[in-house]
Figure 1 (cartoon, rainbow, N blue to C red):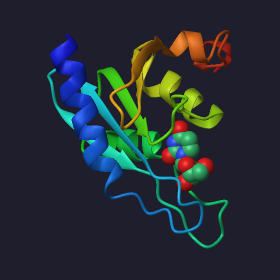
Figure 2 (spheres, protein in one colour):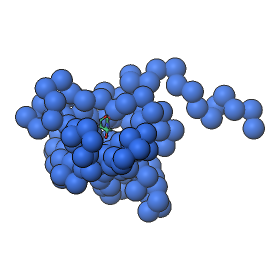
Figure 3 (cartoon, helix red, strand yellow):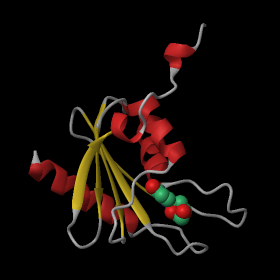
Length: 133
Ligand code: THU
């Protein structure tokens, strides 16, 4: 388990190298792992409108889904911060929708990490259960 997490952290760090963050300078990497062990990485991608920026977590999830993957069991987010960077609000919603109550590991470049569950970051989440369709 710890080995798997370390492997995924390495993938997320790799993803972070490809961050497109000329406006904020804040580079983030992410990696999601599926039940069958496939890994998809992501990085934040900014652009001149600022508002159309996409976070590393969502890029990783969109890459996986667009490749036909699913059944996620773990997600890692890496940034160069002393206090571990958690997924932002919109990403928490997307992680809940597409990954469910998975393990989310936050890590920095100094080897510090902490693992929490989606439900801890987004308690009492809105989702399809509330839609009467
Ligand atoms: N960012 C992420 O990619 N993931 C997070 O969890 C937090 C924020 C990015 C978005 C933007 O490119 C930069 O970090 C500053 O907010």
